Image 1 (spheres, helix red, strand yellow):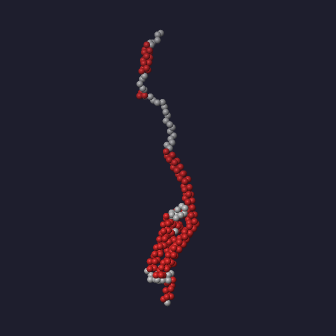
Image 2 (tube, rainbow, N blue to C red):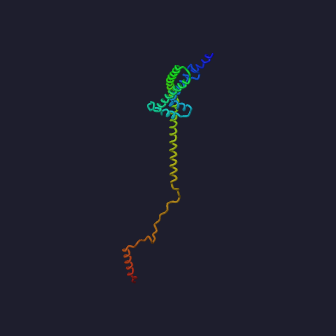
Image 3 (cartoon, rainbow, N blue to C red):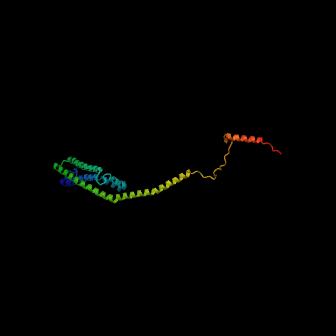
Length: 229
């Protein structure tokens, strides 16, 4: 009875050992999924944010392009993510070994389980990586790229709509400035200009020749007497 009761527990564990022993398949699936997701985080993260309405199409594509070069090759950011994915896979394998060593099972079984976990993490991690890449690429082409084009067209329409309004506003400001600088109109005409009044102060010094002629004229008038009858 004890052996029959312990059989389901051994099957649930996935290793044929104690129930507290980590299952090989389940552990490998978890580590492989984390590995593949980390490697494609550059495309999965903007796709998820766009799906929940937390990021627009322009910013989603800009975020993804940050990890790749213009020719489509992997840039430094993409290689960092891939290195982090490999590190997560190795860490998962080491943690499995640590947990397994706490269980009193056959050493041969421990080595077999560790080898199975290593192979499954490597194979499933690569499979998850390419799956995430394929799915995120399809989502980008179907939804994010059209949204990016629509956002660009909306921005261009707003800019074209604002240009005529700005020109009218500038012309109105110029007209108001000219009208404010123009002097107020008046019915009074220009002042009449008359001959200048010459006062005593305007008479300059008398010419000596004019004074001599005036003296000769006075002498002639004195010599001429009354008429003779």
